[in-house]
Amino acid sequence: MKKRIITILLCIIIIVLIFVVIKYQNTSSKRPQNYIELSQIQSTIDKDKDGIEDQTDILENALVYVDTHPKYKSKYYETGYPDDHYGVCTDVVAFALKNSGYNLQILLEKDITEHPENYDIDEPDSNIDFRRVKNLYVYFLNNTINLTTDVNDYEEWQGGDIVVFKHHIGIVSDRRNFNNVPYVIHHNDCWQKKYEEDILEKRTDIIGHFRISE
Image 1 (tube, rainbow, N blue to C red):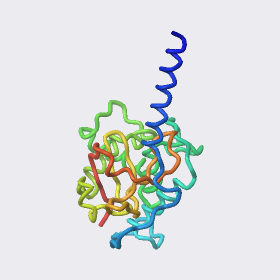
Image 2: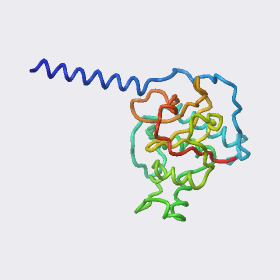
Image 3: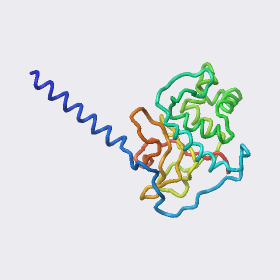
Image 4: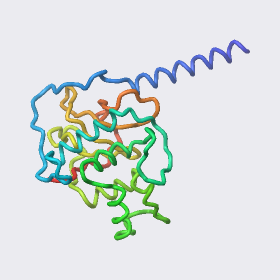
């Protein structure tokens, strides 16, 4: 009986390990190179007036943020933005936009105050509301450019776009796989080793695809 229990436990452990390896395997230890030549769009707006237009700025700032190798942990911060090298998926987007001139903490607080009927929030808290996927989805849906969620329409997916899944969010990369579908810059959980991964085709829960500005 004891041997049988041990065998069952070992089988469970092996299955879990296989699942983790398959689900979280890294496509590449380096940023993948484009396999085809596609023009990367550029915005006509430079929100923070740093000489870099918004589309490129958001993309580059997302990469700068994940290059700090934040550790995954959901915490509450009195300052709103994490300041201790921890973070969650929404922080990739929040920091990418903040460093491009768009402070989501302020923008969400304003939108929730002006349009409370759009948000399912009993007691607004500006320190955490902008770090909730469901709130960001509502904000982007009503305040940005809505784009296709069909990954096969690959030319419409551009580096610097925002992709929202049912319970997750990330920044679209300018790197693509062999099917021309872009990678996603994101922070999913503590198992993740690389922050730029080929996951877009594998997800069946894409609910939004947005662009900040033309």
